[in-house]
Image (cartoon, rainbow, N blue to C red; front, side):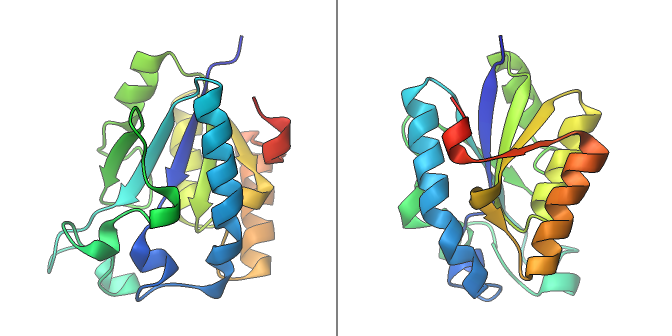
Length: 177
């Protein structure tokens, strides 16, 4: 029997309304909300993998500029997707939700074998989180309406890559749980 967990990547104020926001992010909010509600109702854990960067020294600032600085409003989950009691929040310093975080430990303790990856930057943070999930033996599912990136080409390429290279299942929220 499949044991799922939903991973919501970087649905933070700075990515939605802050310095690195994109107008393309807004259409994924409602589908992610629907997925999380559906998951919670089915007893599927919801885990937020959130950028949380250290001021002044973070390497990502050289690429993206300052964003999601730990302890700021910009590093908080957007109001529409706030964590609920029983959800997990995993701060991350890099693109991957797994690299030097507690994400794998939480998933193993929950007995999860399949991760449902959602959130912003399908071609960056979602892709790197997918890679590390694959390397750790997790099955990967990506509901297409719950992720996007700055360009249509980047989005289509990211989903194709996750499917081809990591064996990810691309589906719809309605296909899950």
